[in-house]
Amino acid sequence: MLSFEALQVLDAIERKGSFAAAAESLNRAPSSLSYQVQKLEDELGLVIFDRSGHRATFTDAGYLLVERGRMLLNAADEMVADAASLAHGWELEICLAYDGLFKSHFFFPLIERLAKKSNTRLKLSEQILAGCWEALAQDRTDVLVAPIPDTVPQGIKVQPLGDMSAYWVAAPDHPIHKEARPVEPDVRAKYRGVAVADTARGMQPKTFNVLEDQPRLTVSSMHDKYAAILNGQGIGTLPWFWIQDDLNTGRLKRLKGGEPFELTLGLAWKRNRMGNAKSWLVRQLPKLLEPYLQAGDMPIADKSMK
Image (cartoon, rainbow, N blue to C red):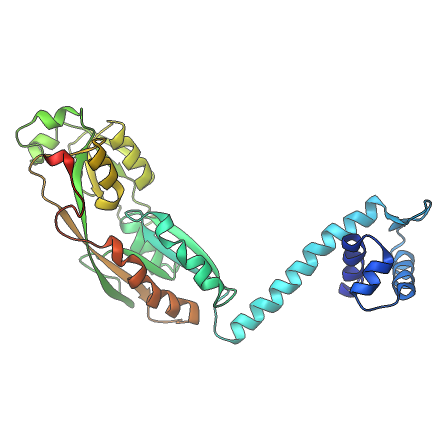
């Protein structure tokens, strides 16, 4: 019978390089390890060590037992840690979904902070438009950060976080900058808009600041939208923290007459199943996102409007 104790012995022998060193690390006599290994070989009908040389070495079968055994030992350790976390009210995994307006690295500080609290695994999920709220309604995420819709699904708690400014922009050599009224719908309709595809699976997908009869390029992420606009492939609105450096260096230019477009962001979660990790996220996120929730005109010098 292959026991966890036997796997620990094989692991120690491979790591320490000898029976004697392994026995010392396990606080056992070398003879007891030799006996246990020989007994294991007899029970399994396998030759785990090649004893033909001056020093016993693992056979291929022996190495396989060590490698696969370590996977089992690690899984056992994780199982015990997960059970301990659950016993103390911490979820095994917590999913945080965020609208693609945000950059994923904004949430990276949460990883180490949560690791210091528990063994809860953090999953980050980028969603777009209606897909954000669908993910929360269908329990595909536990906590959501996204623009607040006109109607919030039942059973969902929403905590307003603040307003965020977005701006109409295009590459500096884009022909729309020659227009007298570039942000007017009849003018924008002549130029390709760049949109991010809604991630909703069942709900009616939405579009944002793209006209029905306007030429359109649809991409799969906000980063792709930013790259397409930067490359001159179309026009669109982007949050200030995506474009501040590009406006200052002249790589992007705001559309003339375009006022900041305000979005009210919210933190949302279902009222049921409030574990420790979920409660912890709800407390952490407002402070974490505060630097990015600035409303009003560009919070940096915008050379493109001079």
